Length: 102
Image (tube, rainbow, N blue to C red; front, side):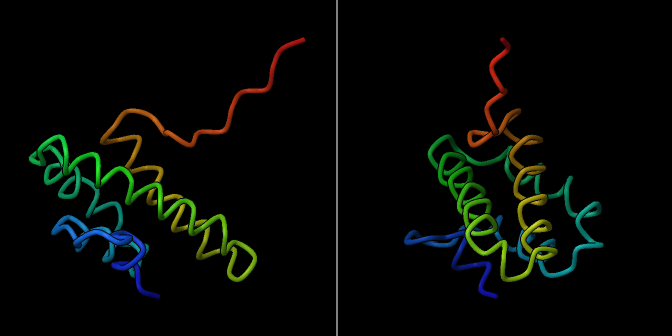
């Protein structure tokens, strides 16, 4: 799977994608890669950080669209993207809405 293409979309690839691709290709390495990815993200300027957030959203969308092809892989992709988005940005843009209380 071309994670690099999914992350970049139609934009130029960012160096931070290297760690994310490693985490996606080797799920057991994600805990060790989380902090280095976070620290690299903290050095990005605002515009690049915005592009990075959209790359994480693209991963989540890709996982949702391809969920029926390989559920385990889709769950892993979405997990990595959501954990990174929450740790780096504090929340998820595409977080499911809470059901309305009656």
